[in-house]
Length: 218
Ligand code: HEC
Ligand code: HEC
Image 1 (tube, protein in one colour):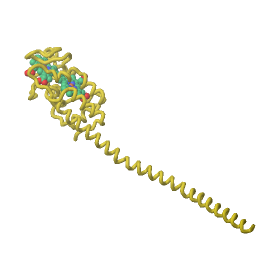
Image 2 (cartoon, helix red, strand yellow):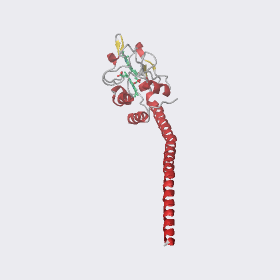
Image 3 (cartoon, helix red, strand yellow):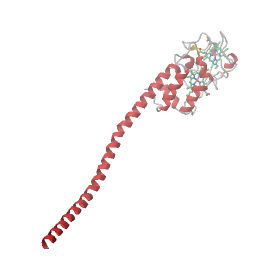
Image 4 (cartoon, helix red, strand yellow):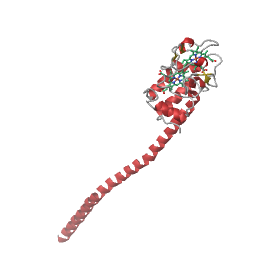
């Protein structure tokens, strides 16, 4: 009897010790597991930082490149001639000052009698002035100069509400896609060159510039 009781009590003791150790282990393990999970999270979070920075960096690169390439159009004389540094619009591929001493005027529609639409009509005139309805240049208080800007300068200028008439990137792109003055550059009338890049490709590049974060070249 006593032998059996001894074995019984011994087994109880073992059981108790095992239980205790399991509990103790659990108690030890529980925080350990929490710490481990935290570590995994921290590692994951840390690992994602360089990735995100990498992705941002990549997006910036794509955005910058898209803008630089759009410069082929923006700085083309068909565009830049209406976006001159001075108050005289420019003509032809060498961007010489407009003849007849044509001036911008406060609203960009010409000064005095020399209104743009006096000569520029709703369509291109063969061997005469080119035209789309409401032919004019940007106004005096918001001249939107492209001539002589670097791609980086122009990019920052387009983003500056004080220099872009308070337009958002979306609005600028909308303008680029739909404004007849812009579209005219690909249909400028006989004897005038057009930008090397199509309007479609140009729009796509500007969209990419916007989508990838409006990053500017140096
Ligand atoms: C007295 C007539 C006359 C007036 C006024 C006039 N233009 Fe012109 N413009 C012309 C003629 C003609 C041409 C074509 C010149 C050529 O291609 O050799 C021309 C060409 C241009 C071009 C050249 C397009 C290119 O890329 O080669 C621009 C830009 C232009 N005018 C802008 C204006 C603006 C802006 C105004 C008003 C502020 C204006 N013009 C007023 C007659 C005029
Ligand atoms: C006949 C003149 C004329 C021509 C040609 C022209 N523009 Fe413009 N552009 C303007 C005027 C005027 C504005 C101001 C728009 C307004 O206030 O409605 C403008 C505004 C812009 C703006 C907005 C600028 C800003 O700071 O938000 C962009 C971008 C632009 N033009 C791009 C172009 C491109 C690209 C071309 C050639 C493909 C072009 N323009 C050709 C007259 C012209």
